Image (cartoon, rainbow, N blue to C red; front, side, top):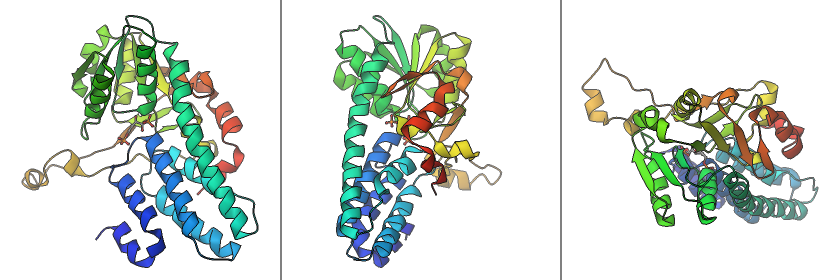
Amino acid sequence: MNTYKCLHFKYIDMQQLLDTAEKIRTMEIRGAGRIAEAASAALRDYVLRIKVTNIKDFNKKVDEAANILIQTRPTAVSLPNAVQLTKRHTATEVSEAREEILRNADRFLEQAGQALEKMGEIGAKRIHDGDVIMTHCNSHAALSVITTAFEQGKDISVIATESRPRRQGLITIKELNDHGIPTTLIVDSAVRYCMKDVDTVIVGADAITINGALVNKVGTSQLALAANEARKNLLCVAETFKFSPKTIQGDMIDIEERSPEEVIDSDILAGMPNVKVKNPAFDITPAEYIDMIITEVGAFPPQMAYTIIKEHLGWEFTKMG
Ligand SMILES: O=C(COP(=O)(O)O)[C@H](O)[C@H](O)COP(=O)(O)O
């Protein structure tokens, strides 16, 4: 029985939140932006069901729920940021605290939706008629830029990587196909070979650190290396809530290691006692490989991560658990 199912017995009133946590853990809900939105909404809905009348007990329950959500996936910093933006309040009465949290969640969800649109508009200015764009994995932020440029009438096409082992690239090509955008699917190892045909690489982000490094789906750093070698631009599209305040304090971003079964059948692996599997879900691209980070508040060089964190997330976030 998994952790969340065990918790079901202990916290009956938390069932919906535990279901969301499980969906995030198993990647039924995935992508840094969607994870953040789902967590914020789950916390909002849970807060409506908390029955205690004492503010201390209320805060304890909120913290408990927040921690369950945060622990589902370790890398996407959008998750703790969204939870923190949702749960913070200054109230001394339960009813006021509840109201504040509901308002926070609604504001976060509204702003997250608007951010996608805004990033699309800003990023599309960097795409020219005739451009070939390479993208990796499945990023709603990156897709917002690509589809906005296409809807503006720019004649563009996309090369999308498969993104082993979970093959999120298949979600990307479906979305691009539904928009009518000419798309070529390639395996991840064809990235360097195909780079000569590319004008701009556009990827999303799970986290951006204080030194402007990009944490995104494993393989992103290979795209960046190949793009750099071929002198092609790499744009990262990321809402401000994907910047990591804790990296100011020296904290590192945890890189999620996922099950070997995503890579190879466990029966086949069992027959090869000298073989083990390493399955990191993300990797790190240094700032010098990134031309621009497109956020909902503007396009910035990665070196401006400090300013984004300070102005759009605030110092209180560095104390987050
Ligand atoms: O790496 C991934 C998804 O990884 P996974 O499939 O493991 O969650 C995406 O590029 C970012 O999360 C950004 O996505 P978005 O722009 O949609 O937030």
